[in-house]
Length: 402
Image 1 (cartoon, one colour):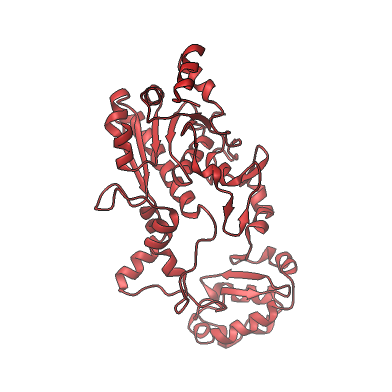
Image 2 (cartoon, rainbow, N blue to C red):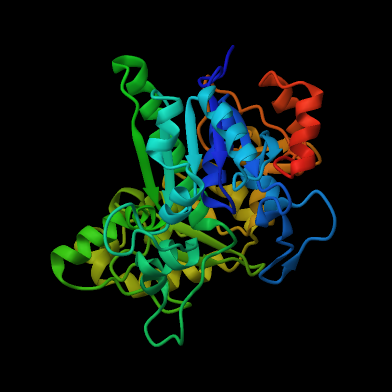
C-alpha cells in the first residue's frame, strides 16, 4: 500500500531542528525530501554534540538523525550563480519549497516566493519562522527556547511562584518538533487544496504561534478571567477538590498519576482496587460536594495505601481499574513501555531507534531510514537533473556543489 505523499517531492532549504523536522514528517508520509546543505559547512546541527548534560561522541548522532530521517542530502552553495541555478532546477521539479531562511536571506539569495514561483508557478512555498511573517519583528530569528517556550507563555506558566528563573523545556528541540509537525500538516492541507483547485499556497508556521497554540486552552481561560495560571509548588498532590486527580508515591519511590475528573463515578472502584472497601460507602465521600470538602483527608488515605506496594504491583492491580491513570515515566522508561512498543511509536532508522511521527495510516508505523550523510546524494541528485559528469566536475571545481 502506497504512502499518502508518495510521488511528492519536497525541496528543503533549512537548518537546525524546526523546519527540518517538518521535512522528516513529510518523508515519513512518503515524500521524497531533498535536503539542501551548504556546500562546505552543511547543516550546523551536524556539529551539535553537547545537549544539556548529555554528550554524543561519534556517529550516529541523534541530534541530526531525529529531524533528518530518510532524506537525501545535496551540498550546494546557493550564494554562487551556479549553485543557485542548480537550486532552481530542483525547484522546477518539486511540489514543495520548504525553508527556514529569514526574509533578508531569502531576498539575498533570490529564493523568496516570487523567485521560486518564477520557475515553478504551482509550487507550494512553506516557511517556518520564529515570530511569524508579519509585524515589526517578522525579520528576527529565534529558537524554540526563545519563541516557543519563553515568549509564548509556557515557561512562566509551569514555573511555580517564587522559583528563581524558570523551569526549562524537558529536552532539546521540544518546541521545534511540535512546530515542525504543525508545518507538515499545513503543507499536507496545501497539497490537497492544490489538487482540488489548482491553486498553490504560501504556508506559514512560527515557533511563537505554535507555542501559543500548544497553550491555547490556558490562554483562553486566563485571558477571559484576567488571571494568570499558577503552577502548583513541587510536591503538591494535585486538585484541591478532587483526591482522584493528583500524584501518589509508591513503595519504590515511583509515582502514579490519577486523572479521574468525576470522583463519585470512580471512588468505589479505586477503593476496591486499593483494599479500601471500608471507605466505599463513607458519607464523607458520597457526593461530589462531600469529596470536595474532604479532599485532604481522602488524599492522605490514598497516599498511605499507595505507599504499601511497588509500581509493578500497582500496575498489575490497576489493569482492571476503570478510571484513567498512568505511571510517571522518564524517557528511558517510556521507550520500554509495552503500549508504546505495541503501537510502534518507536521505529528503527538505521543504527538508531527514533520516535516516529505520531500520525499513522492504515494502522501501520511509517517506514523511515537514517539521516543522510552530509551531501551524501549530491551526485545522484545532479544526475537525476540530467547533468553529465563533465558538468558535475565543473560545478565541484567552482565550489558550487560538494
